[in-house]
Image (tube, rainbow, N blue to C red; front, top):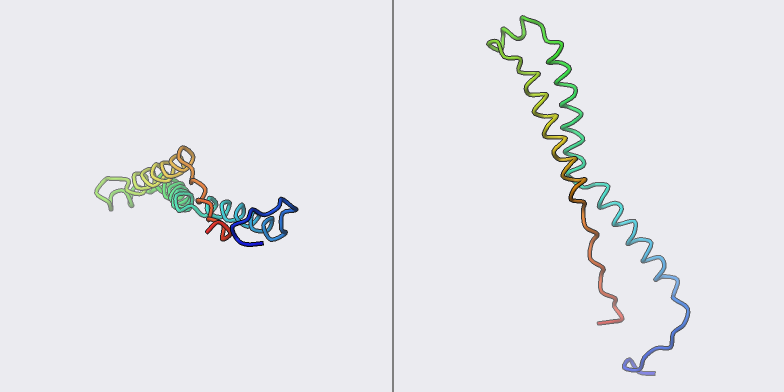
Length: 106
């Protein structure tokens, strides 16, 4: 049998099944570690913490910042930025990576 002749259909090789499973895991890992998820989660978490610190600020710390509750405003900004990244991730999910061409085709 030469390379030009079509191969008879038969049972799929075991390695092909393993390759498909690894491709699915790779896609899942790519979506799990999307940078938008990490940035959005961290900014949201830190935004909540800094906002709580701003709500509990003393008059002395506000006077120290020339009358501006900087922790409150910074916390709200961080919270909004984190939520923006998470909404962006939800509305525009990571596309799956393109399938690699089979070695048999080339």
